[in-house]
Length: 278
Ligand code: ACO
Image (cartoon, rainbow, N blue to C red; front, side, top):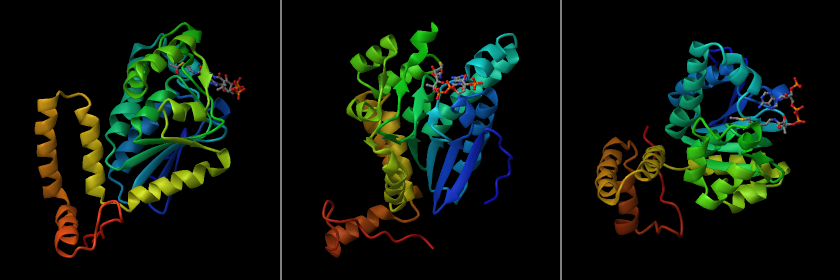
């Protein structure tokens, strides 16, 4: 599908069901300008309903994933223009958190290099994160005399344990991909040479699954984090019913039939055979 938009700060590439969304200001280490926020905000709306996009991978051009907010354009550049600052802030939060965390297909952050400050939000928003071992992560805000704002402070307390969130926010110490895996900031870290292959393997794993089950599962897991037990119980029952109603593949029935009647499927010993709708 040809891109309707001519983006200048991001690049979109599609191959075999995977849509690669690439932050594309390598000369500025993919620091996020107001224009990048507007473009990402638009792109995620388009890709959410793009049938060719079955898994979205977010990454960066060149040697950085994202060097955080653009200090010149996002901060200083909007200092005397409240309207521009409002628009930039809103788009920044919308794409990095609201639109990415609720994206209706699986999302993977392929963290290919420097990841600082505001760049943490989109890593947290993606369903999965894979880093290169030599990636440099840093909550550098404290070194700028600011705090992990936007919603970075909230993101890290959701994703990391409290001690690590406080430690990295207060010290501004950097950490590498292996450490990011150890503290649960990414799912796994791999040598740089294997980063793309590992990402494609995970994307292929997700594409082999029933898309309705993937979508409803990610929505449910994210939502119940903010509920108490009675709310979660009620919500999960209703969400399960909604999945059953909306699943064109009727995966629940197929799985039960294969396990109970045909005896051709045992969870843990193999995958149930998907029958995709015509
Ligand atoms: N905002 C604006 N410009 C930036 C940013 C940024 N966040 N990060 C890098 N750049 C610019 C540099 O100023 C430089 O511009 P110039 O060529 O016009 O001088 C260019 O990108 C390349 O950066 P270098 O520093 O030369 O690249 P290097 O590879 O040596 O270092 C690194 C990369 C480590 C990412 C470094 O640029 C850096 O520390 N950036 C700031 C990271 C940061 O603290 N971000 C958090 C900001 S706070 C927030 O997000 C809320």
